[in-house]
Every structure is written in structure tokens, then in C-alpha cells.
Amino acid sequence: MYKFISRAIQDLKNNPACGTKIPKRLWPKTYIEKNSITNLWKYNLPNAWRLVYTIKEDDIMILNVLLEWFKHKEYEKRFKY
Image (cartoon, rainbow, N blue to C red; front, side):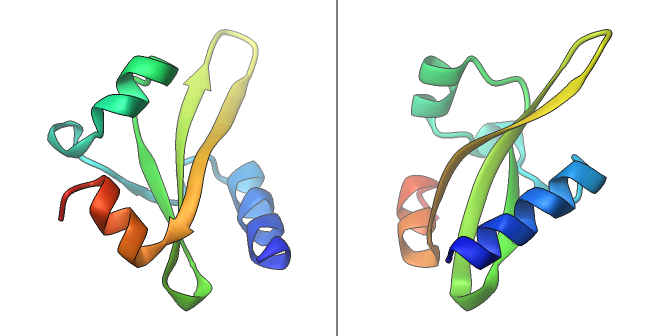
């Protein structure tokens, strides 16, 4: 898993929006309350794992904040699919 997440981090460094944007209506309340997110993305990892992240930016930098990674089954549960 370490290798896959390291590759995901490198991909996100090259292109912060390389994942799939998650529609706002699907955002779990926990992410909104704990992280004050304004956008939410997922990055598909091998073996049906998912990495969920948000993009924070200001005038100087763009920052990807990794929120969680989990198996697809747990991802479906979190997002109530």
C-alpha cells in the first residue's frame, strides 16, 4: 500500500486535480465539519482502494490534503452508495 500511496502523492504533485471530483451532494458531513472542505476528490488506487483528498489553495501555493484511504467497500459505506 505504501508504494501505491507514494505513487498517488507523486501524481498529485504533478497535477493536483488528477483524481475524480466528487459532487458536493455526495460529500460526507464528517469531511465538511472536520476539515471545512470546499472541494472533494478521489484517486483510485490498485486493488479497489480509494484515496480521498481535498485541494486547498491561496495566492502562493496549492496544497493537496489527503483525508483518508480505504478499501472500496469502506468507501461505499462512507459515501452511502
